[in-house]
Image (cartoon, rainbow, N blue to C red; front, side):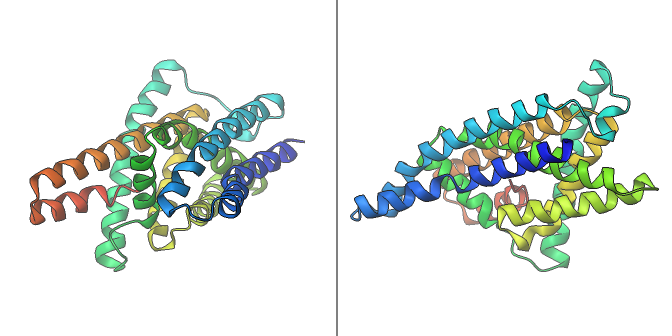
Length: 253
C-alpha cells in the first residue's frame, strides 16, 4: 500500500509540472497576439496555484498512510539533534554543491551557467510571487517525491548492505532529479545534492530535515542571484560580473 501512495505522489508531481501546459495552449489560441513575456506573466499564477495545491496533496498523502519506510521506522533524531542536522546540512549541501560545480566546470568542461537556474531567476523577476514557489512549495514537493517516493522506496527494495542500497537509490533519485530539471550538463551537481539530501534523510530519520535544508538553500541562492544581478548592473564592472557569476552560477536550483 505504501508503494501506491508513493506512486500517487509522483503522479501529483508530474501533474504539477504539466499544469501550465493546457493554460498556455488556451492563451495561445484565444490571445494569439500575446508576446512571450505577456504569456509568461499570464501563465505563472496558474503554475503557482498548481504548486500550492500539489504540495498540499502530497503532504496529505504522506500523512494518510501508516506503513512507513524503513528510514522512518528506524530511530529518529530528537529536536536538538534535528536542528543541528538542519544547520549542518546547509553547510554540507553548499560545500558539496560548490565542489561538484567546480569539478563540473574545470574538469568535465561543462558550461558554468545553468539554464534551469537562469530560467527560474527570469521567472521570479517577471513574477516576484514565484519566490514562494521556489523557496517553499517547490522544495517540499520535490523532497516528498525524490526522497520519500523514489529514494526511500528503492532503498527499501535493495536487500543486504545499506551502503549499497543508499548508493543505488541516491544515484537513481539524482538522475531523475536532473531529468525533472532538464539540465544534464549539471548532472553531477544534481546527483551530489541527491546524495546529500538522502544522507540527511537517513541519518535523521526525518523528511523534515532535507525539506528545510532544501528550502534554505533555494531561498539563499535566489537571494544571492537577485541581489548580485542588481549590484552588477549598478556597478557595470565586467570583471566583477565574472567573479560573482563564478560563485552563484555554481549554486543551481
